[in-house]
Image (cartoon, rainbow, N blue to C red):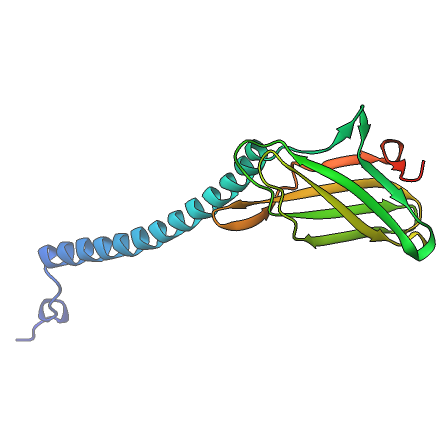
Length: 176
């Protein structure tokens, strides 16, 4: 008598198959949870840094061009390659000193950028700056933009959302 092929094959019992499927699902779930935890922690950390920077800059920076008798203390002088810009800035913030400045001067030929002015303006005090400016290279001044840098989390952070901007009509000739 012959045994049929069907009856001679043995399979996995339903109980063992169920245990294997559950073990596989638990292992897969653990892998997904570990990956998800790392991803969420990374996203949370990045969002926290961005929020700290934006809130710190919007709430903690109050930089203004000083005024004497309603005249902004921002002026230009010289000519050709020996031009200059003078300005006095007040840090009217109550808690944070300004650690550095970035200044951008838009001329009618080109834009002059200086991102490394390492001047500290303590809380409630002012600073006087005199910087060279080439009328030959950049042309007549159209606009001055000053971006303060403050310490957020121990890092000097530029506060691009809190700039001081003055147009050509607000900038006087120093000799006038």
